[in-house]
Image (cartoon, rainbow, N blue to C red; front, side, top):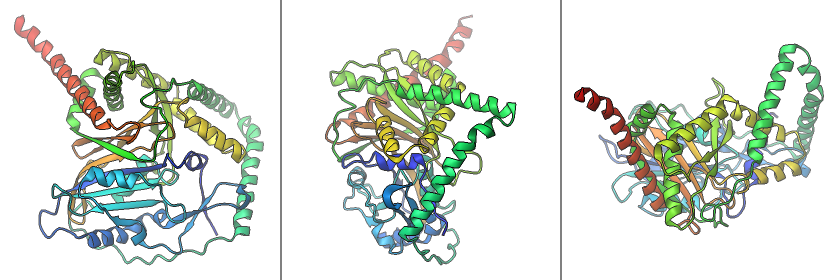
Length: 468
């Protein structure tokens, strides 16, 4: 039977998971009660989610390992699937407590690797929905897209078609072994014939040489050692906390336009400023921090595909630079140069090539690339839907991302934009970095500072004209 095998990058997220480093991505969404009609109950919300599972078949699949570990695991239908094991009622009415409890436990591997916790009546009267899915199953972009599968563009959509799903029979161990060996042989054959295919035309040879150059540059950049931070790279616990920060998207766009940079540069700039101030308060001298920045490499038409379609680039956050405009300029120059040199594409080729080496080597390389010697923290920009969306008549008004923590990484920063808002999720180890809410305040202060500087920049020509 046809099966979907994990890619090398998907496997890497399984390999680096430990009892204290849970490799799930996630989100915390807030909904207003319906403007017209009764508030939905927990059971009604769970039924709503269950009715939309046909839109995402992977949500009813689980992993099966290949005997003897001869190839990567495959996805197979879960014959014992029940939505009740995956959509659960929260035990708290406070959103941050719901997030912390949900995110502090790993996903069991004997079932589909996702969970949604629903608080149908938060303390402020709104509805909270917290979801997580293992990083081997989805990346941040796909997680947002999958969460949007639960949403509709109108408050009262037509009912979905009947769910006629029935699990396909799982392959036997001999079938898994045979399929793994066939795929392994096909990979080795592709590798053996690669030189002949490259040499087929001068254009292919030139393109291959360019890809090799980009991959080598990306590998050197990844191998460039980071200096572990006492605050950001200590041993961590399994306990998590998500610091929340919401800002009007127009504030960030104003900074972007004023200083002629990318939106991602703005997000990196305010992260650098917030971390700089936080480290100073904690008695640690701010230094340049090697930061992993995920990059979406989906081709047109691949937007709905699951698995990991991301690459990465490494940027040194100039936390040692006190001037906010110079910080922003440094980041813009660094990101522009890496993109111009094809850094994300080169890194993507490096990750794909890891799948060609034996499994023990893959695991070693994966753990090395996830260590604090490779990078200090992750900062990820995850675009979300800009149109108004509803879950059973309830409009979504906030959505905070969760970017997972590898071992000895106490902080990640994610940003999701939905509608006219930008929502920062500062995900931290609750034991080693309990002051993450203070850090969120420093990031907000950095945004305020750049907004004020952008207003001053706009005002300068007006003052000059009046003076003339």
